[in-house]
Length: 470
Picture (cartoon, rainbow, N blue to C red):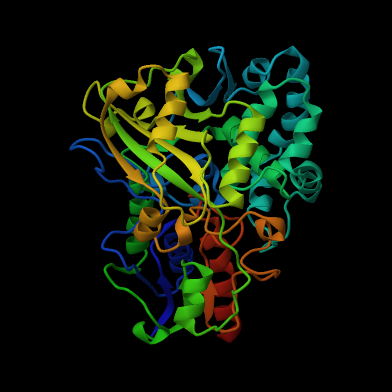
C-alpha cells in the first residue's frame, strides 16, 4: 500500500507528489496522457525545430513560487531565462508603457503625473515581497502568516476591484497596463480582488522578472518529475482513472483534476455542483521568419506584450467574453515572444510567437483573423512573417487538458468569492467529504499559474492527515 497516490501530472500534481516524497511518504503518480506536464508542456506544433508551449509560456509566478524555490530544480535542468524587458504595453502612437524589473523605469513609462502614484503603490510591498508572496499563496491559511502586517497592507488594495484601484491614476498609460495585468484572471475587471491579481503580477516582475524556461515549459514538469523519481516516487503515464477502484490501495488520494471530474471519480455526488467555470481563450502559436515588427521599440525587447490598447478596450473584451456567446470583435491579446529570451525555441534567425484572445466558455468559432488584425495594428507586416500557425479554441484546449472545462485555462471562474475561496466556500479547500481524498489542482487556492502552490498547500493537508492517523 502506498502512503499517497496522486492523479494528474500537471505542475500541481507533481509538486504535491514531490512534497509528500520529500517527507518520507511512499508516492505513486498516475497521468492519463502519455506525457506529463498538464499546462506546462512543450511541443513542435507548427514546423520541425519550432518548440511551442501549448498553454503556459511565461512564468512570473514560477520563478517566484515559494514551493519551487525550496526545491533543487536547477539540478534537474530547470533554467529561467529572461528577455530584456518582462513586459511591454504598446499604444497606437508607437509608444509603450513597460513593466520593467526597475520600479523607476516602469513608473517613468507612465508619465510624470502617475509615476509617483505607482511608486507609492508598489515600493512598500516590494520590500516585503518574499514573505508577502508566501503568505498570499498560502491562503486560505495553510500556515500562519509570516508577515501579517504586510499581508494586511496588501489586502487593503488587493481586495479591491481593478477598476477601483486604477482610479488613483490620472492618465491612461498606467491603467491600461494594469488592466492587462488584471486580465490574467480572464474575468471582468470590476470583480473582487482583481486589483490584487494585477498587483501580484507587477510585484513579481519587479522582484524576479517574467522569465521563460529554457527549452520550453516542459522543463518545469520534467525537473519536478526527475526530482520525484530521485526521491523514490513512481510515475505512470497513459493511465486513465475513471473511479477510485482503478487506483492501487493508498492511505490518501490526491487529485490534480477539475472539481467536477473529482466528484465523478470519487463518488462525491453533487458536492461541487456550485463550482463555476469561466471564459476561455482562443490561442494561436506561430512559427515566424523573423522577430515581430512592433512599432513600439520597447515591445521588440519584451518577453510578454499586451495588446489592448486602453483600459476601456480591455474591459469591453473581457465583459464580452465572460458574459455571452459572442467573441469580442476586437480582442485584448496577451502575447509571448519566447524565442527572444531562448533562441533554442526556433531555428537560427527564426522565432516562435504565441498569442491569445478571450472568448466565451465552449465557443467553437475561429478568432484567428481578429487576432491578426489586432496584431497588424501594432506590428504592421506581421502576417508577412508567418511561416505556419497552429490554432486552439476552447474545444481543442479542453481536449488537450481535461482540467480546462469548456476551455477555461484558469480552471474556474474568477468571479465573486470564488476568486479567493475555491472550489467551495471553505477554509479547508483541499479536503473533501471522503476522508482519504484531496484536491490539489488550480481550482484550489491560490489558483491558476505554473507555480505548484496549490499542490504544495494540498500536500500539507495530506501529510497532517497521515500524521494524525499514524
